[in-house]
Image: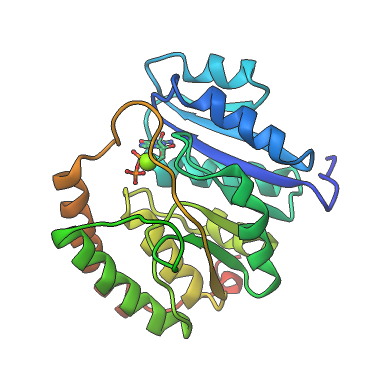
Length: 243
Ligand SMILES: Nc1nc2c(ncn2[C@@H]2O[C@H](COP(=O)(O)OP(=O)(O)O)[C@@H](O)[C@H]2O)c(=O)[nH]1
Ligand SMILES: [Mg+2]
């Protein structure tokens, strides 16, 4: 099977009913660099997400029904490995992640296997309030300890992975919303991978509502604090044991 040339980077865009945003996102990513190949994972959308993404120039993986962001990303990483991409980066369809920052997030891979584009890292004015903020701070503190480095935004979906991380994600990537980001990170750390963060500013979502409202997001965050405690006591398994 043909392998992607080494300088090529796979941009994975999870999308669920994003017909108003995904076209613009794909065009912005294409404009940012000719080295980016774009795969939109259309997760059982009931709108025109797949058509709009294809017309804007992306390859579309159309899942037959909704798997959630984690399931979609795992499909995306499986695609990355199958086609020999050495680096992949997740970018949200809704316009919150600025494609101009992809190069910086990918640049983090010079220091680690996984690089997180992080809010709160002294850039931008993103503010979370109340229990959501509290849960994010607790998650960041606990994961930072596990990672042996300071991480401020462990639920950010803007992240890059090298070939080792792509392999790890194909092996294990949980489906749960927000749990997906934190749990996949802890599993990767337990498998011996390293993580770093790169400061980025997040933009507002362009159209529509987030898939979870403020209350839903808070409940999920609290749940992921709980899931994280379980993840931390789960026996550590490396890639080699499962091969
Ligand atoms: N594949 C997939 N993508 C989803 C799903 N829910 C949300 N997304 C996408 O994940 C990204 C982030 O979702 P969003 O609702 O904006 O979450 P937030 O930014 O954390 O509030 C967007 O690109 C969404 O289209 C889902 O069930 N499946
Ligand atoms: Mg969003």
